[in-house]
Length: 422
Ligand code: EPZ
Image (cartoon, rainbow, N blue to C red):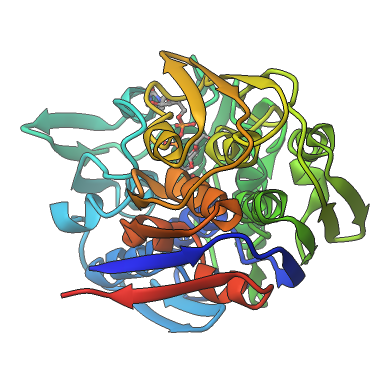
């Protein structure tokens, strides 16, 4: 088992290059199934979820190759349309292969996906949309068997909630379906636009991604992009490093990110008292002295405040002067990091959707376990500013979404190391 050992109290100073987006590369890797040829991707994050997606592609018969940020996937000959439970349970994003396999093969067999325990995380919206496109679905003991005997038919589908995954699944099923598909109340996240850009580069006819209404005209087949496709920067990772600086103090220059994707997040750091400068694809943050509390933080779908940044921004607010109220509107169980932060001395009262954080003068190191990906990142950030040493286990959660997090933070002066215990 691996642990991160973090010795708090050292301000950060340095530059950090933003990794590629986990939540963009995963649907793009699923989309490779639709391409009859070899796809090249660049700026892929070196995170475990990327390799989990590559294992799914290999299990389907694709040939994949990874080298640092570069990846290739040759789906010329897909030999299977079945994904085993082990591969499906590795992450939530495995469910996106449903739309891609239906689009390419007209059938697939898989099971319910894994992913962080943030609540029930059903896939009812995914299933309802596939059925509307002519897919016959049987769900027996958690195994989902899908067949489109007459092929996929375009349809107009209104999502009851702008689900990111459901939007992506419908896009993947629709690009080669017969006729036109309209997705209304579609998710607007930047990762949706990245998938749309990739599919257009493969010859798909898609308009409206990034808005609430996406229109897709089915085409016969997709071919690989003519040049390597670049994955967008990870906005959640960039927010995480802003939080690390807010917790530890000092100054960081976060390079090669997309500041416009953080328009709901940056003002919160400014409210806390951090000095932020945005120029081009870079964000500079400086923090000295005690932070102040922020206005109520309500998580919303994009372009609102991202649910994935809720835990991350709670960390610095634990020692801010004043009280900050959080309202988590997206997931039912997303305050699992509060227990560990309270063991570090924080004053957090969480009940249902609401958490009230009353700032304390300082936090103390503890022995903690990451409850999920972003909760683990939040505890890590808090530990950077805490007095003493924190031992953080559950590192496999953090490695799912962050590339070499201890190396990146160490390069900015953090005292953090990874140990392996038998
Ligand atoms: C994506 O998850 C992200 N994951 C999540 O990031 C992110 O938190 C989430 O979108 C919201 O932005 C990836 O992209 C791999 P949803 P997804 O479908 O697609 C409910 C991270 O830390 N829902 O938009 O699963 C669902 O339970 C992860 O990087 C249904 O009820 O999110 C949730 O309450 C965590 N039925 C809400 O909608 C459905 O069929 C939003 O889910 C689908 C979703």
